[in-house]
Length: 239
Image 1 (cartoon, rainbow, N blue to C red):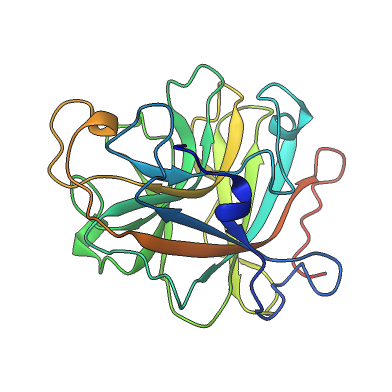
Image 2 (cartoon, helix red, strand yellow):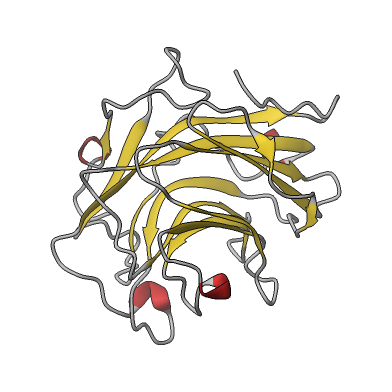
């Protein structure tokens, strides 16, 4: 990122606790601006503080083995709205060789079109991006002033299935999908934050296309942790 420090990207907002936070942990707002450019990817605006948020992993550690439930909650930042003319990735698991995202949470106007013409103010939880066509496992409107809680059941044993649990605010998580076929092979790293894609890109979208000026956007995360269900298949649906 261009001359940016994480202290200028992350904030601790005064918001209600997410489902798995309460008084134990603090929600964090991740923000982007015109200078949020990583590794010469001038087409993107991105901030993914993987070493700052509570869940970080090496790409080959135990968080991407066995049967894991990845928990996180996401809330709109009322002071820094996202631009629904663009596509965003707010969470993704990137394979250790960087060849694919095995699971990804998208928002906005997706490149190639939204599934079934869905409103861009929607969260799309999708499977492996190298699957053709890419599958949407679950979607929901990204409504304001409420936490959207996810529990992603990732079966790394066979490397083949993903199931989604979901709720809003302090409601108990409930399954909203079956365990669907989804290629999780490749291990990798979890990314939480904002990756804003350009409009009108040709060729390498990371280095082409258009981004507006005076960007001031953000999203709030809470309750991030990975739960090991390898022994008993346990999935926590509430604190």
